[in-house]
Length: 174
Image 1: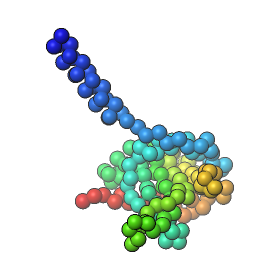
Image 2: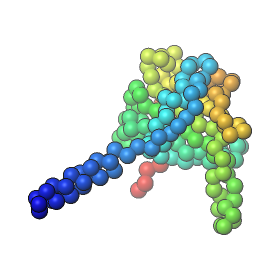
Image 3: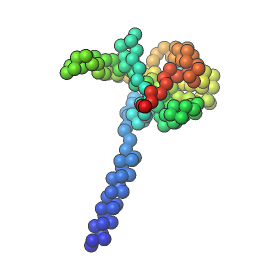
Image 4: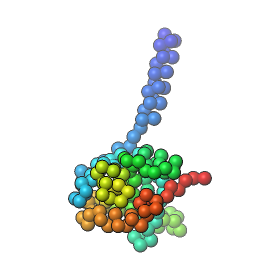
């Protein structure tokens, strides 16, 4: 009987440990597609499991942006290596407002947009750096694909050519 209890406890501990290590957040995103390059919102459905690499504040838009990277991109950032195919960078743009209980500080209010870049030398061989872009804007509590296409993304990211077309450098903790 004693051995049975010990084995049961051991199995319980193993199953708890396995659950904890394999825990994944599910990011339910709408089934939307960019009209010009056919990138789907669903392609980053697991973005809540990506790692934060930086934050930015766009003064012209009064928007705080979180920059996230999937495992491939995070590893490249961390090792200061070129981004491999399959790297995904997600940018979430939030409006901000003063914190009601601590007025000198700002906090996020509403998501304005979720954008992403994916490195894919087959699908985006004609794009600089082989990056594909997608932008989904949130209006009236619903996401919609950016209706102006991705040419503005490409032209803007050309400004960051020396950093593999990314504006974001990893903000490493020291």
